[in-house]
Amino acid sequence: MTTNTPAAVRAAFVTWLVAVGAGAFETVLVVASGEAGDGAAVGVAVRLTVFVAAVLVALRMRAGRRWARLALTVGLGVLGTLSLVLGPIGWLLDGNSLPDLVSSASALDLTFGASRVVHVCAVLAGCVLMFVPSANAWFRSRARARVAVG
Image (cartoon, rainbow, N blue to C red; front, side, top):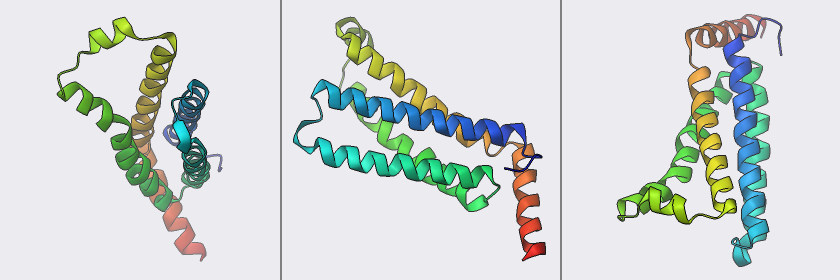
């Protein structure tokens, strides 16, 4: 990481780490609860692969690689967020009630829900922070510097 990396890019990197941490925590909760079922090993392997890839790509984003910023935005910002929210949205559209869910939820359910909120907020914040004006200017300057050198 260069010393002139904008605060927004540094903050975006941290939010991606928070998102990965929340995702890993959710995975642990599901496996520990026994709700993962017979496919737990496969599910954990897939999630672990995504988490490692996300951290590696976030490191490249922090280094000024525009492709990494795009990959995080499309891969996790769009597709990943959809995978996190489509189930709950469908559940609500089926006529279920959030107050009823909260009133009957266990401590594990509430913990998982809180982690999911942190997870989604971190992803959305990471996407926004990567595209604020200071970040845009910095990514452009990094790309120009690579072209000039190479």
